[in-house]
Amino acid sequence: MAAVDVHYELKTSPYSSHSLVIGSFPESGCGRTVLDLGCGNGYLAAILAERGYEVTGVERPGGFTDDFPPRVKLVVADLDNGIPALAGRFDYVLCADILEHLRNPAQILRQIGDVLKPQGQLIASLPNSGNLYFRLNVLFGRFPKHDKGLFDRTHLHFYVWDGWVELLQTTGYSVETCRPSGIPVGLALPSLDGTLPVRFAERLCYDAARLWKRLFAYQFIVTARRTQRERM
Image (cartoon, rainbow, N blue to C red; front, side, top):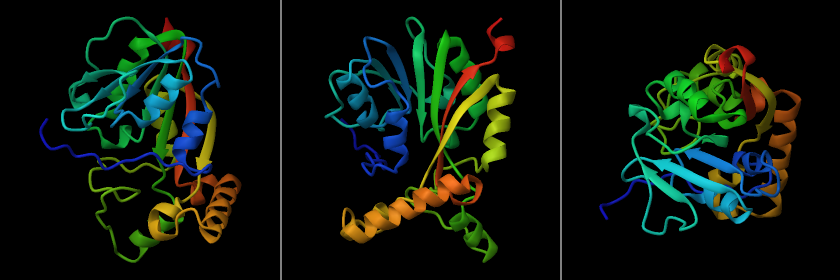
């Protein structure tokens, strides 16, 4: 296999977007189907498969490695060209850290409506460009380019909360729940990750995000369904 370009890894903090995404699914899959768009190396898909979900992941060439989880069906496709042809519809479609990377996220959201079952649910994690850290950087004339995070150099879109809501509504979705994640301090300080001070700081960031999501949320973890009008 050619060299791969995999930046994102599983974030195990209980306050991380990944933990909140997994917590948005019922504990037991009972054979329900999940489409994981932009699944990377299948780290979230593997957890869901272990819980009894039937998971199909879509990832671009070079976005995964040879140790992709065998219990997850992998479809290799570039989502900038749209969702590839798939068999059947899904109970859940997962968009974790992907919509902001796509040239036309509205197109993908509309296509998701075609592959969701009538009562199916969209679960997505969405970065917050209104976060205090983001605002301060812009205020002081800085717009860094990082390998991951809010200033990921591969992000094509930068939305605050109202922008994400507008995007979802105009593509036919109604937001049911929103849970904010806090700043992943352990990722910023990897040598101290898991220590008591970092865990305490992550808890403070999470509590602040819950109090004022527009300013302190690092990401928004949303569940949404198609509106009745769009299902007709």
